[in-house]
Amino acid sequence: MSDSETGGVTGTPDKDYNLIWFAEACLSNVLRLEQYARDADRAGDGELADFFRRAQHESQKGAEQSKAMLASRLGG
Image 1 (cartoon, rainbow, N blue to C red):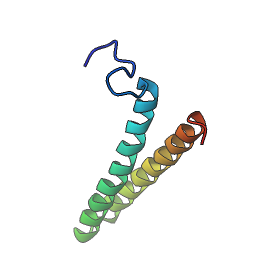
Image 2: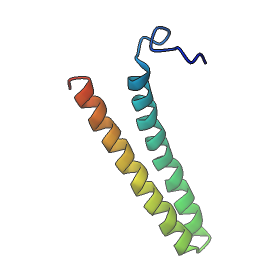
Image 3: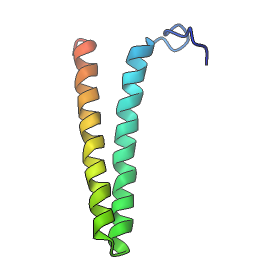
């Protein structure tokens, strides 16, 4: 990807696209971490399951923060 792309190709300015990407990545991570926590539960490893659930919570916070920031920047 070119260092000069600023939305001409995508129609979305890089900073907005980056924020959209970040929200999607956080939400995807929440789903993945749910599976990891369940795997750890099935294996009887509560410590690891708790670790993944804490990480999941942080990803949820990141998703919510990025959605709020995107809404405010896009006037919604």
